[in-house]
Amino acid sequence: MGRISGECIDFGKYLFKDYSNNMMVRENHLRLSKLNIIGANVKKFPNDFVWGTATSSYQIEGASQVGGRGESIWDAFTHIPGKVVNNDHGDIACDHFHKFKEDIQFMADMGLQAYRFSVAWPRIQPDGKGKANPDGIRFYSELIDTLLAHNITPWVTLYHWDLPLSLQLCHDGWMNPQIAEDFAKYASICFDAFGDRVSNWLTLNEPWCSAVLGHGLGVHAPGRVSPDEPYIVGHNLLRAHALAVHEYRSRFQSRQKGQIALSNNCDWREPLTDSPEDRAAAQRALEFFLGWFADPVYKGDYPEVMRERLGDRLPQFTEEERAMLLGSADYFGLNHYTTMYAANGQHSNGEVSAFGNGGMSADQDVWLSADPEWHQTDMKWNIVPWGFRKLLQWIDDRYNSPDIYVMENGCAFNDQPQNGRVADKRRIEFVQSYLSAAHEAIEANVKLKGYFLWSFMDNFEWALGYTKRFGIHHVDYRDGTRIPKDSAKWYRHVIEQNGVL
Image 1 (cartoon, rainbow, N blue to C red):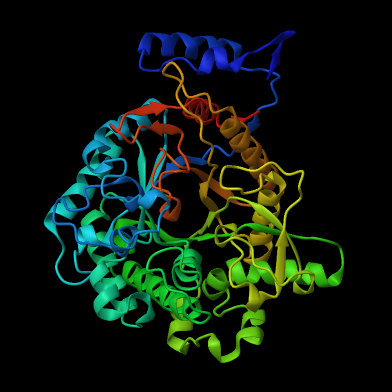
Image 2: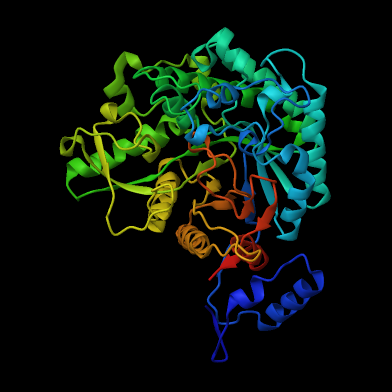
């Protein structure tokens, strides 16, 4: 709430009208403009701060057999009984492939500045190799053009986990070193086709998940379980990133004037106690989580603690690969969701849930826990805004103050429509608290440049199917109807004001 001339403002009264009524929107905007929330202590963000939302191809597109698209590892994985809750799959998902113009209109209605989406590799190269599929190029080209026509800047992720199935079955997927070359060729097709209109690129989304959840714990496609494969997969993912960035910088960047990076996920690890052992455990956990994929880019090699603990299980970069990796990000992309306490492994021999982001616990020798007083989302992820601030400051300190863009942050709550409205108060409270923490980091001189709220709409949540709703737009999976939640309307106001209370 804000206070003006002794009057308390009910922001819901002004924000949560149906913004399909343009006259009502203009009237409410005028009333808000007159109020100007003077004295409401709005935390303003930098003038050039980027406000966006995010999605990924497999989670929303559907049309799995339309337009020449090939199969992905997720198409195969989801059709194995028991791999996904309720045996859900992405064959239709949100049908964004057919509804993208409608979705972009919703984006425009909320004043969105930027939209991060991913390109489905098998929609561009059905088998992961060879010539581009014209229908796939046409789809993403029209998507990009429609975004630009609505003054929404596209941010494109090249790989958000939907590996062409042929590469997995015939070439062992990310276990094969050759895949780095395949990925660079695919990336080049995208740079060539879309780079005249796309200036913001991400090579990989959360390579930690591809490696650990896909090849260590087996809960994501391709569903393999191994103590060693994650490190081989992670190594090849980093090599693929480096080659794709080299391709972009050597052939496209000078004329397209864009920027390129990768987006890593990391949760904050707070020492359970102030003992040297627990502080070392928390640091070790962060280096096994974020340092695994960020250190090679910013320091030229894996964290020393990983080298010490893994020995020959951790692959070596060649000198040429190290040189190509070092500096291979024009900005720091970060996905962040939660915080846990970290203690030295002697506290427990147990492993947290695969979805609790515990990772390769035996290698880290770290025990994770939570404060029972912390509130949680429907993912059972702890809501700890100060952990977000601490992580941003940790990145700033470790990697020499890079420009940071938060490419994902959000929460799952199962709020349902009532009389045509989705009153998701808990989501608004979550995002406001995390944005406040982000503002504190900026005040501490962290170079945070943008924030992408996950997700634009409810969608397929991987192995958890459609049971978790992260969206600021509600999706009825029976008929595809979208409803802007209160959070979408609230976020519109955040964007308008360039700040939060």
